[in-house]
Length: 292
Ligand code: HEM
Image (cartoon, rainbow, N blue to C red; front, side, top):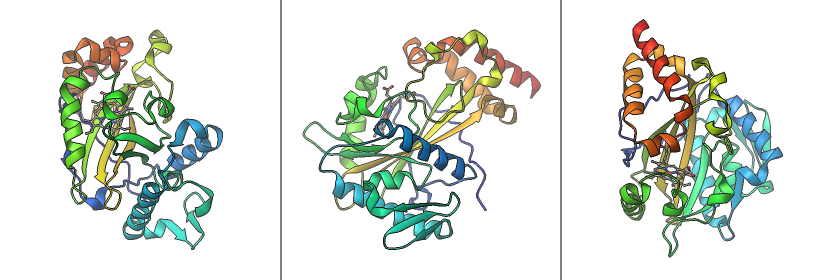
C-alpha cells in the first residue's frame, strides 16, 4: 500500500550553496512505509514534550489555518484513502488516531497528519522570522531558541552562512512565487536512528564505543513555498535516515561522501559533529569501496 522509503544521497553538491531545485506541487509531501512509526513518534513527543516540539507566536492563526487548509486539500487530492474526515474530526486510518479539528492550533494538527515537520515564516521588518513550528524531528536544534528570529540569526551557528548564504536566501524569500515551490537536500552523519535530536551532539558520545554499524546517514528534504493569501513562507522538513551500510549498494555515493568529508572546511566538520567519527567513517567508506 505504501511506497518504500525513497533514497536520497545528496553528497555531490557543495555544502554551502542554496542547492534549490524546482518542486512539482504533487511531490510536496512524501508518504512512505515508515508513515505509522513516524506518526506514532510524533504523537509521543507532542504528548510528553509539547513545548519543545510545537511553538507559535501570537497572531499566527490565520496563516496557520492557511497551511492546514492547503495540506488537507493536497492530501484529499493525492492520498484520499489514508484519511477520513468529518466536519469536526480527521482520522488517520493507519494509526487509528482521530483528531478533533478544534482541539489544536492548525499547524499542530497539520504536523500530526504527515511525516513532515512544518516551519512557518512570517515577513517582518527584520526579514522573515520563524513564527510557528511543529518540529518533532530537529537535528540538534531547539525550536524555542529560534522562535521569533530572522534567518541570519537562526543560522548564526552555521559557519560562513552570513557571508555566503545570508543574502541569497533573503533574496530568494522575497522573490519566491506561489506557483514555483522549491526543495533542497541536507545531509549529516549521526550515531542514532532516533528521529528527535533536539539536544544531541557527538561531543556527548564516546566515539570509541561506536562502530560503523552505529552510524546513520540523515537526510533532510526541505521544501519552501509561498502561501497565496498571507504571503508567508512555509518551510517543510522531511527527515530520512539510512544505515551507513546502505552505501554498500551505492558505491558512487560512498566515494562522494568520502571526498566531501575529506574536503570539508575544519569549522564545518566541527559544526556537523564529524570530528569524533571522521576517521572511523572514512575507514568504513574505504572498506565499502573495497567490497564493491
Ligand atoms: C533556502 C533556504 C535555506 C538554506 C540555503 C539553508 C541553509 C542551511 C545550512 C547550509 C545549514 C547547515 C546544515 C548542515 O550542513 O548541517 C542550515 C542549518 C539550519 N537551518 Fe537552514 N537553510 C534554509 C532555510 C531554513 C529555514 C526556512 C529555516 C527555518 C526554521 C532554517 C533553519 C535552520 C536551522 C535551525 C539550522 C540549524 C542551525 C543550528 O545549528 O543551530 N533553514 N541551513
